[in-house]
Image (cartoon, rainbow, N blue to C red; front, side, top):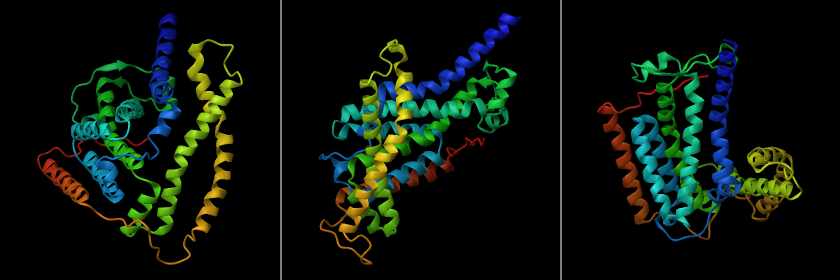
Length: 321
């Protein structure tokens, strides 16, 4: 009896650990800090995404979010596959396609595990499930962590379906960042009437994200060069990498604060907000490619209406914690 109790507790903690650790392992092993840096910066190239107006790509992201959040989960999954295939049109498309796959797997696993253990039977009933297959029964003290319900196969499927609400929007956002310069996005948002201050904040954020990954990458490598984990087995490498990334937060934060001074000097030098209106050397125009994309976005929105009328609307409720 005692042996069964100990075994149940060990397996429960292993399930909990792997549910949380798998996204982290994918991040460290397959994506890495350099991978995130690679998919969050602009690189010049010549394909249809690069020739599009940033406003068009922003509208595409909004349209993908609307489609994925208001229709059945398999429509969001199909849109995710389409956007992922379009990664081949980007510069070094094969590598970015593989990074996109890893990021999607990480997102699906993370979101699934975020929802599945907390989903009650009542919510599963509302989502259309009628039968349930129990995979694991948590020990009673797991209720302190919110694990109040048995882990069922249907809860895992529900969590996977929920993750399809995020993947298409995530890929569309990556396409915008990888194929548009910050200044191009600034001019595009200004053209549609967005406030100058908000535009500036978004551009600074876009410039800061790659610098954050650069700083963390340099700091982590520096710690390994100084001998971090050199006396231990290589199987502990992911844990040392995670430790090094956590320790790097403070020096990276200081590095970004120093960079903020250069950003402020640059804004002052260019007379930011000195006049109510600004002129730009390169005009922001919409080409035939942009109009074709807008037609496609309109078709997507119309498809959403038809899908909802046919009963393919969002039938999956969200769980609050």
